[in-house]
Image (cartoon, rainbow over all chains, first blue to last red; front, side, top):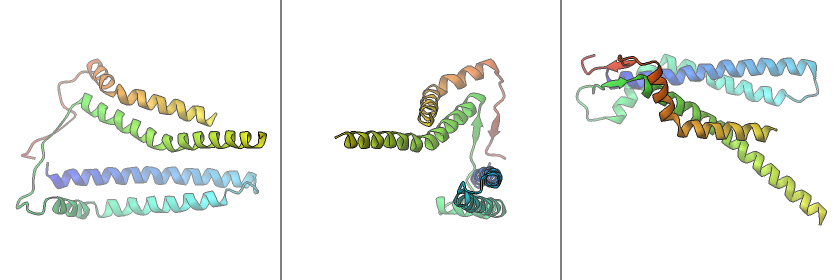
Length: 138
Length: 44
């Protein structure tokens, strides 16, 4: 397998993730719209605008990555190895255990990246609340 | 409540991350196959 083909596969994977996030954003937007219908004073319009912008970004990224994946892969390949006369070929040998290990690590890292900010925020809010209570009791 | 759910998810992710190698080896032993899932050579 050529190195540019490997880069192309990675770009297509990112495009698929963008597509997934786009569908997810559209679903949450539809849910927010339904929620707004039942409760017009909920103030979800700013949320809908944010989700709309995010879904537009994901959609554009998906289209651009799928449309220009070959050009992008060739460009990254050239930038990464400008002196190569012939295209470098890569040997890949992935077994079940290795693939499962990669998937597990990826899922755990995604969970940590998404959960750590809310964990820090919760701890911050807890100490802020406690500090305010101590300050009022004095 | 939200904090507890987040904390549980965080701890679970850390535990799975630290034991990812044994877990993948165990699953691989359960469903063993000699063929690699993805294999490319320099010829292709």
